[in-house]
Length: 130
Image (cartoon, rainbow, N blue to C red):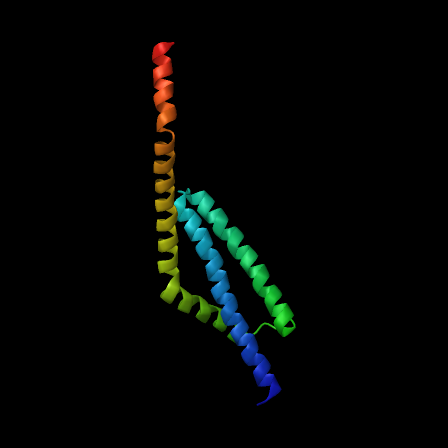
């Protein structure tokens, strides 16, 4: 097979993987938002910062992998990677991790409550005595 075609296929696959990685990073942001409520200004700022950094990373990848030559199929590969990841994995992963974090937080609160029960008992009795 022609070496040029192999290089283009590798670049397309690299773009596909970068699309998945970018959406995984965005899912981390979605998880953070699912755990802690954000106002609209914070959400807009986080999105602008994320996509600015993502743009820099994408153009750095294009520069390193394809000598800075911007090719439409590379962006197509990224979009395809994002779409496949989003449709197959993203929502389940984000919802599952948010639920796990929230449940573990509730369990931790219950554990701390039960562990501190003797201390609270002593505190209440000491107040009565004093």
